[in-house]
Image 1 (cartoon, one colour):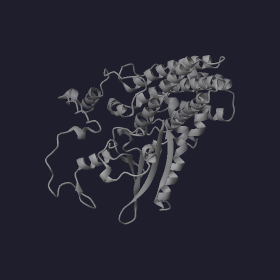
Image 2: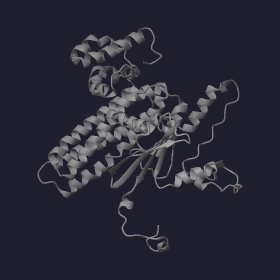
Image 3: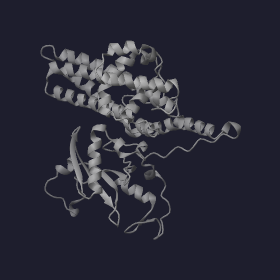
Image 4: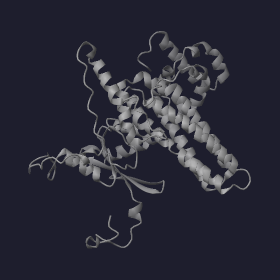
Length: 436
């Protein structure tokens, strides 16, 4: 529950929780709307989000709260509809999220029109191609959800706000599943069911956009300051955007500098200068080479020594993604390679690994870690196929010299090319037309 809730606000929060419990017990929505009409008029988006957080903290599972989410919207819809959009400045992360929602809705309308034409008689090749193009474009929405999961959610988690983000992540996965099902139906040329699936998908995405714009974003706008929003924006390009190129009107560095100056009481003295812009991932590759270190320079390793720059270059050049989670289940490092397989951003550093996965996967994550702690397993590996790629994912435990568990390393690699290899190529064969 929000720490700012006091007096009548706290009592109202308890009543709101009572609404959800009543819904859970089967009380009709109409009766609840009438019974709690007065309190609904005073309900803020932040209270609704705090209510979900409190329910989960008290033992309601995120899955259970998510199932009730559709009913929440019905109960609170009138009060939520009055909530204004929190940020209207182009370039602010919330503004970008809202713009993406608008485009997503428009593309879904296109898809519904194309699917409707396809189910009528014998579809034309042009209609099939039009649907395929719009559908491929729509699938960019995953970047929208990935930015929420990897940028916005970690910032809210640092505020102790975790329940609603877990619920929403579950919703993301439901939409992702609908997209996969729609793709399979399209590939099977099942035109009748394709139209139905697209309409279901459209409804799910619209509902998600409503929850974002009426609950999540207003709450985030209240809880996060400009320094935190600046950090979110700086990490966004590593994940990417769905269909939009954000404006620079809301400048992250300027916002951070002004907020820092304000926090330091700069109004009474000399304003603090803007902080230097952080170097983007891979910037070390383009920097001027420093003088060659002496034979004893760098960090002493089990064999040899390496400077911090050399370690960063080495890990960044590996042909796979690496993520390290320490013995306390906290993410401490990921390799910021140019072409990552899975999205990562600086916001993941310091985040509990359990919060980096959808709720339905957390038990498996915990089981893997526990098996490593108890030395029951030496590896956990999985493989998936996605967008024409065959991805091999492996987890390895790390132990120190005394045998104590010190964390886990995740290694993800695209292995389509490796699986296709035949025969052999020896060192002396290198240099021909097949060399890369």
